[in-house]
Structures are given as C-alpha cells and as structure tokens.
Image (tube, rainbow, N blue to C red):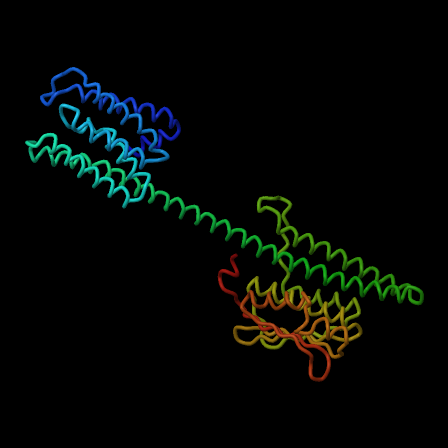
Length: 398
C-alpha cells in the first residue's frame, strides 16, 4: 500500500513532500503536548522546534536519504530527553527516514542504520527513564525495526518487477530481431530468384539476338523466327519477374500473383527455350520419377536453369547433357558440357567468385542437399547436385 502511494506521489513529488512534512509536524508536535497519561499540557518550545526541524528534513530523502536519516535521528534522540513521554509519534520523522533509506539504498546500509537507530533510541529511553518497563523497551525496538523491514520489502518487490520488465523487453527485442532476421532471409531468397530469372532470360535473349543479327542479311526468315523467340523469351522473363516480385505483396492484395513457383514439370519448356537459343540439350531420366516437395522442386529447377545458363553464357556452341537420376529417397541432377572454354574455367570453377555457383550451393544446402562443380577429366564442365525428395517440415512450411 505504501509503495502504491509512493507510485502515485511520483507524479506530484513536491505536493507529496509538502503533505508528508505537514503530517510529520502534526503527529510529532502533537505528541509533545501530551504527558505520560495522555493529558494535554503546555507546549514545550524546544520539543516543538525539534519536531519541526525533524519534519522539514524529510523532503531530502529523494536525493540524500542518509542526511535525512542523520538529522531525524539526532532530533529523535534529543526529543527523548526533552519531551515528557516517548512513543512512536514522537519519532515519526525518524521512522519515515528509515523507510526511505531502506527503499533508496542497499540492504546492508539500511540494516546498519536500523540497528544503530534501535540501539541509540532504546539507550536514550533507558537513560531518560531508568524505570521504563521491558514491554516499552521492546515496543520501541519493534517500532524502529518496522520501517526498515517495510522498505526492504518494497525495494525487493520493485527489483523483482524491474527484472520481469527487463526480461519482457529482452524477449520483445529477441522477437523483433528474429522477425528482422526472417525478413532478411526472405529478401535473400527473393534476390536469388530474381537473379535466376534475370540471368537466365537475359542470357537467352542475348544469344537469340546475336543469332538474329547473324542471320538477318542472308536468312531473313530465320532471323524473323529468332526474333519471335526473342520476344517470347523477354515476355517469359517479364512474367517470371512479376511473379517473383509479387512475393513482396500482402496476402490480402487482390493483385497478388496466383501462379505457382516453377518446378521440374516445366523442365521441357526450359530445355526448349535453350534449344531455340542455339544450345542443344540432351535430357535423360534414370529410375522411376518421384514427386518432390515444393522446396526441393523449386531448388532443382533453379539449379538446372542456372547451370544451363552458365553453359549458354560461357561455352557457346557446345551441347549440354542433363540427367535426372532417382534413387531411393534422393534425386541426382547433373549438367555437363563437353568443351571447356578459358572464360568458362575462370568464371564457373569451384574456386571462383561467381554468384551463380554460390547461389546454387546455398539452395542445395538449404533443402538438405549438396552440390559440386568441377572440370571434367575429358574436357568440359560438370555440375552435380544431390537433393532429398522431401525437406524438413520447417522448410516446407516457412
């Protein structure tokens, strides 16, 4: 209850201090006008002065609770010899100072101050009134010990609440950091998809444009056909780019794309697009085809797309062999070309810094697979990826 009152008093600290001083003056000064039997007597100027000084020292508890304690203790000890009786009301400012000291300082300081006050006040009582009963002495000690105990309880409760708030804030920060991390991961995924889409279709468009330029003078009909393929390739690039960027839309956006992510079911279209661009592709399937989880299906398609794009970009004029081998719970994807080119060796070698190869490795690792890329002993380059048919639940349901 006291802590709740102090919590409200923080909004108007000066008003709270004024009310505290007024209450202390009324209680302490009023007690000095009573005798041992409780009868009214003439005011004692010295006792009244000590009561006022002791009460006026209380507002200093916000900055210097130790000084407040020292002043109220000195006044309280003096009142033991000046006043006609001793009770809790006479040392009310001292009791308040002990409470504030316990609330605003550490436990050791509060206990030492409480013990010193109890010993000195009890000793002053015994010296001033040698025939004081044992029950009165015990009562004085009890009143002195009570504020320290209450203040220690309030301080402990505040520390407990502060610790709970700190844990809640830390947990909130952790959730926010996790959300930011997930957003960053999703951005990386989208960036990979954008890279795959743009690199694939730009490579095809570049190859088709080059062939069209070469055929334009001698074979205008074939050049026209190649330009038609170029239009199809750029249109497909725009559609896939729109579908990928559409992932950034909100779920309730009516214009959000409904087209599913590409998978191996679109592999024939992919192979046909490269063949129209002048890259012969031989596709073979070994074993019984098995359905793949969505994440693995998209990963397999992107790896094949990036590998064929690298062949078309770095080894023009060569052919590519694509093999899908299903075995047990895994599928092996290989893309090989049979003629190495100096530029190709530096651009797509495993030790190079190409982002396409790095992206393929990260994609394969993300679904629990692995990818290798190296030169073939007989010439050319080989990309091999081994992927599981199924990914973990956290991968399939992000």
